[in-house]
Length: 252
Image 1: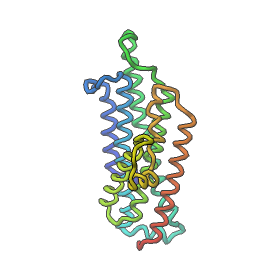
Image 2: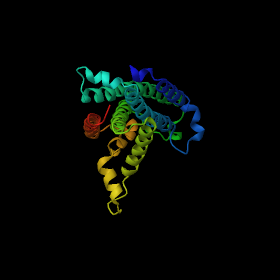
Image 3: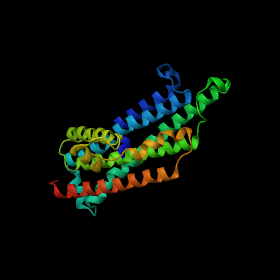
Image 4: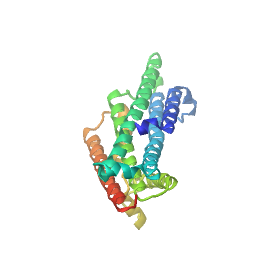
């Protein structure tokens, strides 16, 4: 409920929905992709960009508000331990992110279906799109939600060792950017320095979720989706446990 009441979350969600509803009319920005793919990719971009902002900012604001108001001491004086406190915050944000992904995914799906219907009278030889898969599209949305939950858990771990909201938000975004760069496959012959190796081990591997981008126009892979879900759940649990341990070691 705290996460839902944040005005920034509502503002970002409305901005994402507005952009997706206008995606069909922004095709003049397209660089040669198919019409349906452009609308689908536009939805994916909104999910990723705005979702990452919500994941980081919501967790950091919720956690630091408890620390700054000293209400965390009141919570922990009850039969609530550090694990419950940490997972309570992250799971609350995860539930809010699910609603965000569903709303954005639904608007994107409606726009793709509407665009596909508007193209029904166009001769097939003038179209470059593959058949749109609704099931694959929703699997893609699910994978993006898993990725956002993973980012939220990582941001919570950062908050556990930080005393400043601005530092937590900035560091979390930097770690997400570093994780994206570390996940880029540079080939087996590319030289990697120590920093890249450490980043590859400690930071999340977003390659588990990048494969889902093609599901909207192809059959989704159960194996890859299950692997992404298992990886996100494992990272979520480990990051939450690490955050709880760090909270238990600091003065609250």
